[in-house]
Image (cartoon, rainbow, N blue to C red; front, side, top):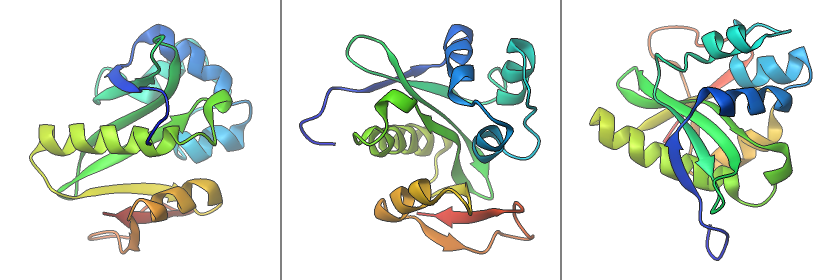
Length: 157
């Protein structure tokens, strides 16, 4: 993202998760983002538990004023840095923030995990995210050793 506002990653906090809860107004939006096991309707407690905030490296994308612009996680899956629960705040969409989130998160995750490749799942109905991931060099692939996630494409870069 050239010429845009400076964006940084910082460890996500419980108050940021409370803010994020407003980004998912429906069961469908929550499922597309959080996966089939993520509960909806949620409470602060179930949202935090289902996000696995304490179990997974979880990061907030912040602007120069430390406002929350996005969120993402990574972990080791099938020998790759797997990016998960990627989301940009509704007020920040369409401005290149998704690209920056993925760049920063992938770099941090690959370095922390000692791997060279990234992977992610994307809902087959999330055409905007699919187009972004393809622009960033992700390609659809067979999930190693199994069927993958129902209703989602497995992508690698």
